[in-house]
Amino acid sequence: MSRLKVHEIFFSLQGETTYVGLPTLFIRLTGCPLRCTYCDSEYAFTGGQWQAMESLVAYAKQESIGRVCVTGGEPLAQPACYELLHKLCEAGLKVTLETSGAYPIEKVDQRVVCILDLKTPGSGEVSRNLWDNLDHLKPVDEIKCVVTDELDYQWVKQMLVERKLIDSHHEILLSPSYGQLAEKDLAEWVLADRLPVRVQLQMHKYIWGDIPGK
View 1 (tube, rainbow, N blue to C red):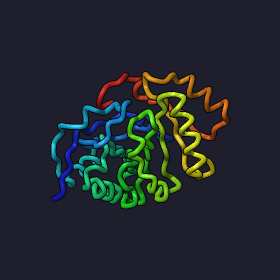
View 2: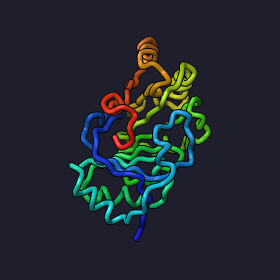
View 3: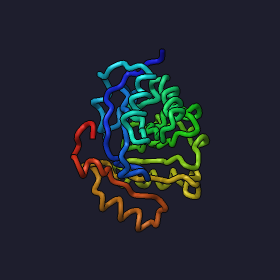
View 4: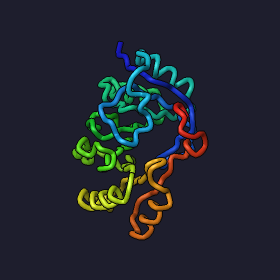
């Protein structure tokens, strides 16, 4: 029976993406090969408990209200995550995946909504972006960039043009790095450039603060 190392499972409000505010069951898998400068889930790099695939799916079906988010760490760093995503969909759940984009999403079940977190230079991990993933995005998938400063913002602008994402059907999400970039600065840059993106804040942090499991 397949197993995954799970750091935590918790029920909360989705704090980001176009699904912000929706009650969601989060399955946070242990481990991540990236070390982004602004990472807010370093605690999930290690620890956790091995859990059987079937028990995870059964728990999600019982304890969620139909919506599950698989996150990390980097969930796709565990190969069994692809199977978990498939089985959650088979159980009739609405599933989102939060991934760094450093692992291929081609094998992810087509019913899963992928939130692809492209890494900016300020993350320190821009070289880990697997650009081929852009070719496998579905119309419902979303692209997220965390912006640490104005240089990151200019990089995002150029990347959106070069990768022909401005006129794509994908939702483009820009987040100010929490505690590092003023929300107002990012908002004013986007408005000044009339950039067709969605500025988003991490709602859960404004409700509960920077607390794991919220």
